[in-house]
Image 1 (cartoon, one colour):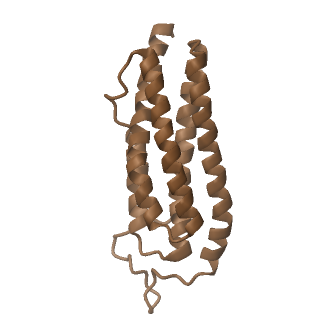
Image 2 (cartoon, helix red, strand yellow; image 1 turned 90 degrees about the vertical axis):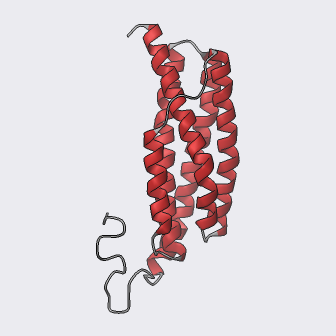
Image 3 (cartoon, helix red, strand yellow; image 1 turned 120 degrees about the vertical axis):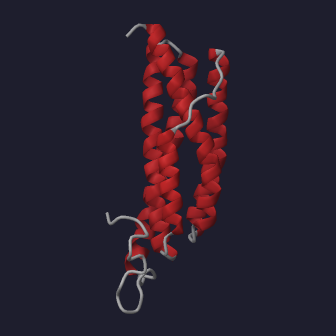
Length: 185
């Protein structure tokens, strides 16, 4: 692949990440609001601030490239955000809902880590050292967010295991029976 082709791919991948981050800026406040655990809520609020900084870093890269950040919609993030929204609407309560939200958030983080890892490799190959530095900052933040979610999940998942299932009706039938609701994992 010639460098001009790799550069086009790099710009397309950056646009995809930009779209993903913009979608996440809209989704994180909803996740924070739905979380019942105060630490989890605070984690989402902090990550929202970080995400705004990540958007700014991407805009810096686009300025350096003399390209526009728009023109591409990240369908992967759209699906992850939609799935997270469905999770938040489930009839789970308390720690079980928080555990479900953590799972959805970690899928988002892993998706972002993969995307930023890819563009970092492209930037390195293209000799875009200033871009590499900006991407490294974001990649470190995404990995840190994932680690924090894992740590929070350990305690919240234990609480969820001890919590009565609020989605079950007294007769033992799942209130989501009949086709509505999420698939079994």
